[in-house]
Image 1 (tube, rainbow, N blue to C red):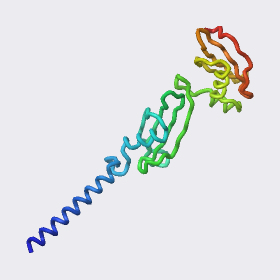
Image 2 (image 1 turned 90 degrees about the vertical axis):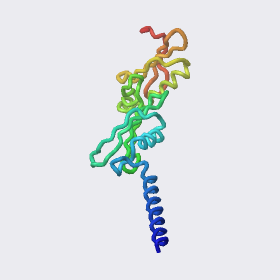
Image 3 (image 1 turned 30 degrees about the horizontal axis):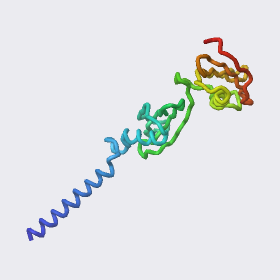
Image 4 (image 1 turned 120 degrees about the vertical axis):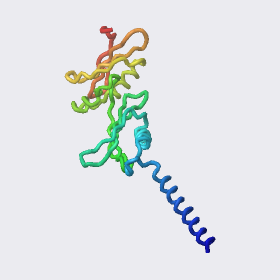
Amino acid sequence: MNNTLMSILGAGLVFFGGAIGAGAHTNQNIDKNGDLIKIEVAKDIAARAGSGIVDSIDLKRDAQGRFIYDVEIEQEGSFLDIDLRIDARSGEVIKMEKEITDDDGDQDNDSLAMKQNFRISEVQAIATAIDDTPGKVMEVDLEPDNGYYEIDIKPGNVEIEIKVDAQTGKIIDKGLDHNN
């Protein structure tokens, strides 16, 4: 009888211990609060969704009262910044916004161009200018009052200023940049 009782107790402990072990394994991605995914998991989700490096991540409550991770992604070698919101309970990406920024981190001319209803984006204007004059793009400015992009390109030791029409995408002026 003692052997039978010991066998039952041993089997119960193995079963109970296995259940605890299995529960610990399935909850390894859960935060200490018990129901939020860990910040490391949210970072992995964000890096995959945004195809970049996590610049910052904050746990917040949104307007609906749910916990979210607010994440900023930087894509190396690109002027693209991505803001993500990840549901902190499910890990679902609930919002993604992409914004092109200049090298100072400011909002780029493309947003202004969209507001002005220009047909050509800054990226398209740069491509047109580089096709015409291959070189390093030094500066890009949208001149909304005049309806063109002013792009400074350095193909060698001089800077060339190219103006690209923001409606048609055609080069409307080209010459040496006398400001540099």
